[in-house]
Length: 226
Image (cartoon, rainbow, N blue to C red):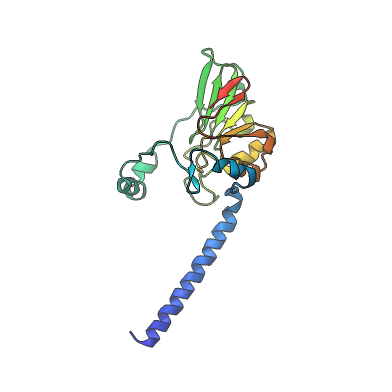
């Protein structure tokens, strides 16, 4: 390889590196408001004291089983639209606040609102679980998995709830625009230990956030949430 070719390759490599850094910087700037915040201070100290914390991260008590990683990767990226997109429009039943004026006669009712979002009515109480009203399950407004249908219940029609319960902080369970909207309603949040840092970064008052480690419980309107 001649010296000239080497110089050209070096220049191309440098140029591509600069482009990649610039692109990464632009992506970070457009997404940083949706990335929440890292835990610190007393919150981080509590996380580090958890029996589930080691080597700088939480670990499940039992290992997760996802099946063959290669098959999962293949189906997700090369399986075709049949694996990822419905063949026909999904039929939904629109809801509004009036739909929840009367409680369920059985004492329990669960309404699915898309993604992992559930409105749980239990013995006269309401819990909103993993609320996602955003257009995409992504930190970006212009890329990432897009919802297949509008939420059956507009966020402005949400009936009064006792608490929002978050299971974990993946984008299809913890949605930035939805949390910011709920932050203005004075709602209580019950979330996994550490997730409260995201909520505070998005405007939720610290005194409205309850963070629980595995198997810990808190009282919400006379009901135990574990």
